[in-house]
Image 1 (tube, rainbow, N blue to C red):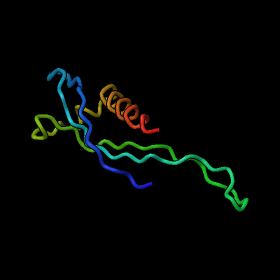
Image 2 (tube, rainbow, N blue to C red):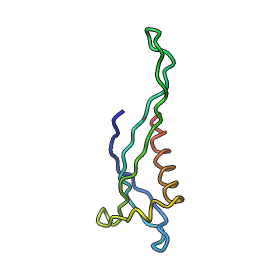
Image 3 (tube, helix red, strand yellow):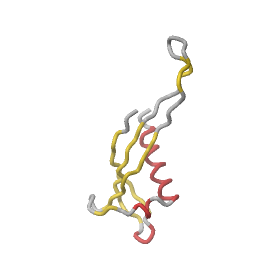
Image 4 (cartoon, helix red, strand yellow):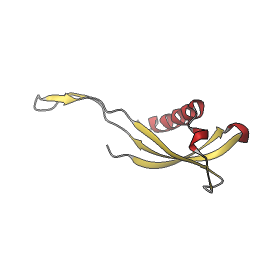
Length: 92
């Protein structure tokens, strides 16, 4: 499935800069469920999981791009992915 681009606002702890309201620019692809067999009896295909790719994190109404070294830390990235996953799981 072709990914769609989104912007999601959230508050992140940016270490020395404290908690900041940021916009996360990312792409999301919903994936698709597995199909065991096609209608004609042929073997189906495996599940394609949903994918989230964070492209940028910006603050200051889009005027300040946060360097990826700050938001790619494990804890920060987990927070971002958890929030975006929860947001998109509401679609189902």
